[in-house]
Length: 388
Image (cartoon, rainbow, N blue to C red; front, side, top):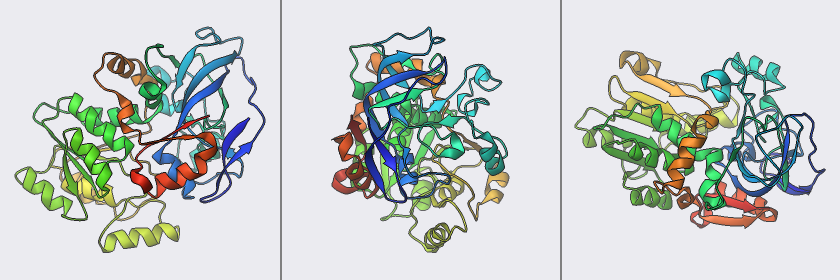
């Protein structure tokens, strides 16, 4: 079969690889009908996530048709059309039983690696390094789905792939980011980063009843998409976000701040340059420029929610502001399985059509071009969907 494989920094190729097979009675084999390039995949493309190996199959946003089942998978049948959560979860451990699916104790066969890095291991993830399990990803014609009796959700035929594909990751991720803010009816929510996750965080905050959503970015097409959703936009290359947010909130600051940027934030001052140099020389693994701004801007007693990916260690964190302003800091890989049914219902009922975020549709063979276009923000690119 064809699959999108990582071969090094900025080196993604479409290779011919062996078809996946059933390895465990709880496995399924899925024929992929749609898959996408995620902003998190760009961290792999740019070489910032450790333990990648040449030939690893990429992709954690995918859906398709069931073509083969292990003998213990009773909830699916051949021909079912399913969406697959990017978090791989066993369904029976301490954390799965508490709806904390991305913290599954049993799905990362390389837990010892993650324990050395993080203290404890999160769940395994598709196509996202050997630190997180070494699982083959879904930017391929076929994929093996472990714990298929737990993760996949069947989708109704009247909904298109593009309407439901982002249930795999970015829609639940943006929704959980907003949910972590405990939004009240008169709240102002500020979102750093208007990429795909930021766009869903904006719309989720609005669905939860936020009085005002402020969106911060520098890319015109991303700001325009946020503006069309009803957000008030701030171009951080034109105005200082901290000062603008003070003015917009009467000096108090937003009630909640969402960092939807993560480890590759861009800064416009000396600290931005320092972060870039430190990351390039591996003195820190991420550029927390947006996170620092969010902590500084958030009102006293407010919440900072972090769906943006941070892989390791960051410097110059304003913990004094966190403590002395009594901020609540919430983060985590998304507990996708928690949100699948309620968000599928919102799509079915017409409350949201997640396909609004798609700007580019390509074949699987065009994936290398898609990665570069998405990373470099060429051709007004916000989200790439690949068709195997």
